[in-house]
Every structure is written in C-alpha cells, then in structure tokens.
Length: 138
Image (cartoon, rainbow, N blue to C red; front, top):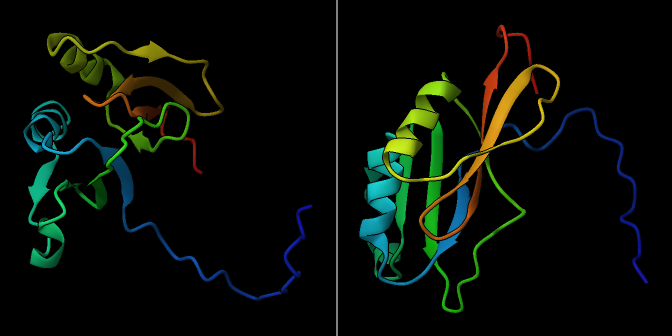
C-alpha cells in the first residue's frame, strides 16, 4: 500500500526551472536524431561531455529548451509521456512535418492554446503548442 509523503510546509519551491527533458532512443541512431531535431525542428546539436559521449545519444538546444536523447538498451518509445514544446507557428511547423513526411495529430484546444502531437523518428510522442493571442500562461 502506498504511504503518503509527510507534508512539509515551505515558503518557496525548490524547483526554479527546467534544465532539459530526456527521451530515450535506440543505440546507433544519432544521425536520425540529428536529422529530425536539427533538420526538421531547427534545434542545434550540443557536444556531450566526454565522459557521457561514450554512452551514445545526443543533446540538442533551441533557445533555452534542451532535449537530451539517451540510448536505452531495450528501447520502447514513450507513447503517452511527452514534452510539450511552445512554438511560434503551428501552421509553419505542420508544413515542415508534412514536407518531411511526418504525420501530425491535432488535439482539442486547451485554454489559450492550439496544439498537435507528432512522433520523433523513434516513436516518442512530442506535443507542440501555440499560444492563442499570446494570452495563455502555464
């Protein structure tokens, strides 16, 4: 049976931001990851620290957003859990995906956002969200 955590009353949260999101990928697919994250989404590839580079995988950045892809031996894509990326134009991104032969799945609007889902080359679910009239805030 689940034991609840003790309640700690604090004045401030420990969490102050998000450094990166990590997704899994199969071994040896770094070139496909780069084609998608850099070529389709416009991220830049970051060098991994040398002590981590031997493990495989790759790191990407777009502005303050970082995505790290780590090699998982018995890889299974994340089909439900996903990062939600804020974008400038879903319409332009949808065209990018269509040009690359990638399907998008539009979802119902949530307060202040239009959004759709797409998968990276490994089947990981990614959500892309555009603020409507710049009003929404999470």
